[in-house]
Image (cartoon, rainbow, N blue to C red):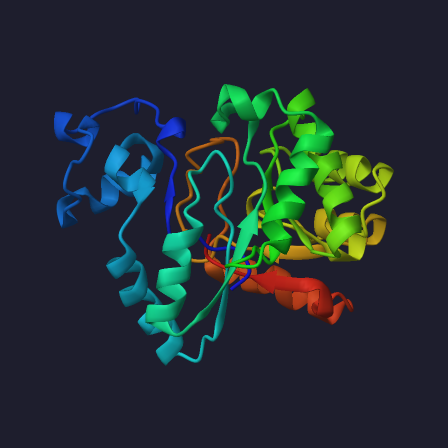
Length: 274
């Protein structure tokens, strides 16, 4: 799995729903119960408890299912802005018996603290290279690098820093594009201009960004990056972050992937659940 989160905190993206069934959804630690299931499907980011993964034991239990199904490696892409915890991930790897490839980098501008927003390209690059080359529990990939649309100046700086860190370490880069069909191309232009190896760039969330085979093929022909379908399991027609997008079903995702394989792009496709 190329794009997962075992531990993270995304309460910075919390927003009030248009309709609220119960005040308990707003509580900092509201218990998630079965009767909330349908409501959460359409209001994913409107329950604070639903935006936090913090239990090492629960992560190990879930990885046990993954291991039993034959899973051996998982890429964990919780970066700065999502409150990463490298030491906890190391414990999870040891307890679960699954290799956890840890990411490093910066999530979207809106999630970053003031100190991170003030960093220049050299400082960002130094941080990522340091994480990738440390002796104890090093990171194994750059990202997910969070991007909005249009890119903010600090997000563009972070992308250039990621390209520089890649040139130093040869690590792959994983991208969280903005929620607009033009975003993946804009990101690739910044990365290519900064000297990134585009064959070692993974463009994530394509199953909510480029929704037709024509869009996907056009993008694949223009840019050499890996094509990631990483929202498997999310089959809600309403995409809570962008209501203009009709989220595809898993069946539709498979149809698009099969068509990409048939057209010769199969070696560039990866999947996950985010």
